[in-house]
Image 1 (tube, rainbow, N blue to C red):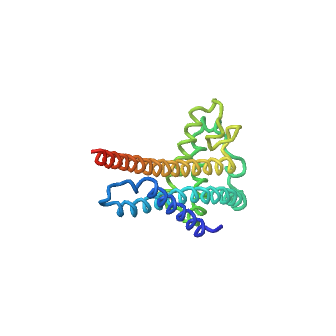
Image 2 (spheres, rainbow, N blue to C red):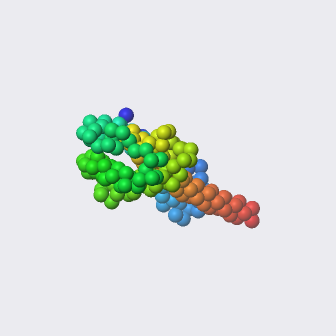
Image 3 (tube, rainbow, N blue to C red):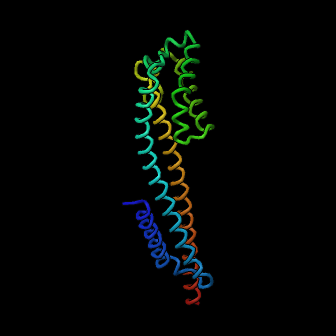
Length: 219
């Protein structure tokens, strides 16, 4: 199902939930301004539903895009830059701790193999520099703990403490997916909190109005 159709479907769900909330809660609001609250409720449910859908759908699309292009970039590097020592042999992080110049050479190699492809994909220079900076920061961490047990699930190096094309691309992929996951999580939490606040305030307003009418009728 296409994005437009899914968007329409979730928008309809949002409108439907808004109408249902109107019938269950907003109908008990004070008569003054009740019609406006009917409209506001539908708009709020519509917007939050659409934003939640867009965030989750976007995550799946970005995840798929990153995974697919990670493989493409790895194949591109191996095919077009096999002459580079880093591409052929990888970088022994343990050995680098005794010869920091190897790290500097590898960073230069990374720029040679990654920037042309990143530019082709339209990655802004500042974002590219941020990503490379993150890689260098991680490598320095690995150098500082060269003899420590390597956590390959959170590193740009493999289980042998080598930085390779495969481990580099996998590390970048994991980092990007982690950032996307955090962003989507924050969006979802914000939407849920805003909707929760609106629902609680609406329930409180409806309850107060019902009590007011009940007290008025009893008097």
